[in-house]
Structure formats: structure tokens, C-alpha cells
Image 1 (tube, helix red, strand yellow):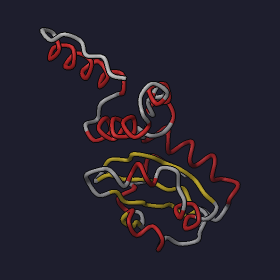
Image 2 (cartoon, one colour):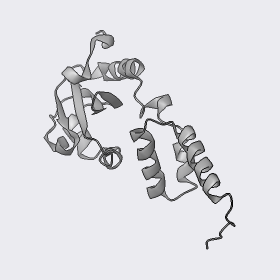
Image 3 (cartoon, helix red, strand yellow):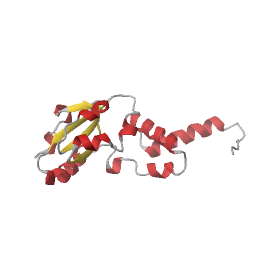
Image 4 (cartoon, helix red, strand yellow):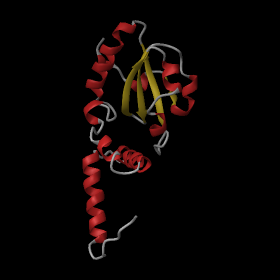
Length: 153
């Protein structure tokens, strides 16, 4: 299988909000925002996987519609290899090295809901976490430059 020839836009797909209507097949799936591949995963039961996917609460908060496209794979032994090859080909931002590995570090420093909102902002604006943090801190410091620091309990 030549993964370079796979176009997720040509695959069967459903809007994320209709995830309960996904087929019960083994597949490699693509989470898509328009033509952009956000995430690639694999499962032996697509419907069951998306009934309780850990990325659901994060993805549903994105401002633009998200779709789940899938490539059915009858040989379950090939799922890992196909998924790995597709991740290498598409480099989705929510997989592996592009997933902002330092995101977990900020969740320990600020309240989790704020960290989640910040991550959604980064994805929507196609910003790496470190760059977005630099911008946010610089803007905060610029606004507070001539104001005395406030202390909150």
C-alpha cells in the first residue's frame, strides 16, 4: 500500500457530532478540520473507539467543524504499520512530535480548563505551544509594564 496515494478527503467520513453512527470496523482514522489532518489513529472497532475517545471533549470545542474519515483495514495485524506510515506521511499536529509535548507541563502550572482553552487556541491558530506562550507572556508583560503587580490569594 502506497500511503502517499491516500487522500483522506476521498475516504468515507462523518461529522464528529455524528460519531455514534460510525461503522463497527477495524480502521485507521483521520480527524479532519476542513482539508487539514489533525490526528491519525487506529482501532479494531471504529464505532466503539469514538463512543468514548479521549480527544472528543477537546475536538468538539474547535470553532470549525471536524470530521472523522476512515480507511477500513480487514487485516488487524497491519493497523499499526499503516497508522505509523500515515502519521509519517501527513505529520498531524495532534500526533507524536507535533503534539506539543510540553503541553502537559503547563497543565501542572495553571488550571486544567485554562490549559485546554489555550491548547484549542493554539490548534485553531496553527501555533506551536512554545511560540503561543511567548506571545501571551510578552503581551501580558507589555500591558502590565507601568502597573504595579497585584497579588491574588
